[in-house]
Length: 616
Image (tube, rainbow, N blue to C red; front, side, top):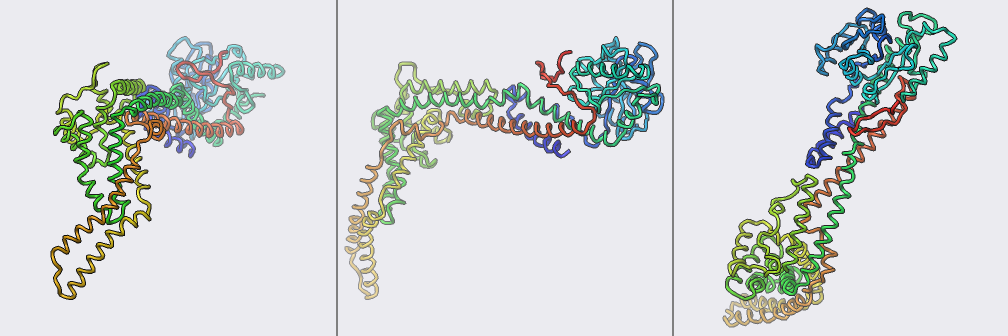
């Protein structure tokens, strides 16, 4: 049971993943199929269920009574159907528990019999006139581990293997019994048996020496009757062990059928479909960015941002003395950055534009991101419209797949509500627009749709600044720049200490001159840093940005959908391979060691996903 128990635990994990993705119809269908299989896992210690099936007069009830050792089931002496309900024999407690577990309590006639570890079922005749009889036989076959099919010489040519019953038992183990062999002359028995074998094979089953027996139930000891051998086989511990293995094989086969269904195939190809759509949408976005980054206003704004980001990273690259004025410059640079960005957005340097830029700068400072939002108002109208189309395409795709749960709150907000009319100018809403937008974003802390559009550009700004900061001041230049302020500091400290030791007071002019000399000594290094910042603050071309940019924020839901589909497909393929390996090993072991070899046929699949034997 270890392969089955391991597979069961893995399948429950797979089922939970499929339930999380149940918005997709194929995932939901596959989950339903797996849940139906997992609802009845094989019992490695439960009694073995053997169902006797056959036509009227085949001797099912006679064999049932003989194996039980008493007259339990009514026996027919003519062609009429006597068995009109299910009869189950075995240890009473085991049979009652089995019937209760299947919801058949009160619907099955239970007989006490000395059949340890086994439950024997007598079923209605397959060729009876009542459809209810066929339903009972099919239900018994579905519940059985082994199916024993009885026939007799007079009806070999019309072996009563009804299609519905054969379909229900397509993955069961079969034993074929030819009853009333005592009525056949000894010289004709080989011919009769060969004809019976041919009829069995015509129905798509394999009739080998370990699953084909000739017997006489009314005269078990008659010459040529293998009734004793049949009884010994059915009541042996080896038979029960192999039947339980057949039960595990049947369960693994049902799992394999569920994992090989059409729904599973659709889940397997879903990652490729989503990857194709992602590539298409990302290609469209790259074209949008290429057009947007070539806009002069956007490039000027990016130059401001890269320069300020480089200044922000500069103190750690300048050394102690030069880092001081650089840090002070960064602290007060928000004023100039706000003025520049406000002028860029409104087209003129006004107090309101200045305030809007300052608020955006403050927000970017606390989020440790470039203040990229004002540049969204400089984007061309066509870029905004195309971005709306990409966002709408992604949403429709995720709705088709059924995974709208991957759309975040910002994504669900839809396209830009303030997009300008086709062919019109971008609306700013007057001088108050930058202020209102900045305050709203500062308070809410959420990313607007336009900000998501420029998310890769903001990453490019940060990356360009970091790359430039690594080449800002090599250590020899940094050492030379810090020597003058270090010398001034050392001189002032020397004079201060010696004066204190000698007890002489230094004049106030000494300190004012010391401060002035220190500022003058720092200025060359500061100007050198400013020159290097200006030289390294270069905006890469649009092609370079697009090559290094990751997937834009707007496509993150689609990326998450593709990753989810890939995980499901990989787990499904791996589980299917493990199930097939375990099933093949178990089937080969059972075929080598006997117990009524299962049909050596390749079942076809109908539209409902049921395994069918070939047509007669």
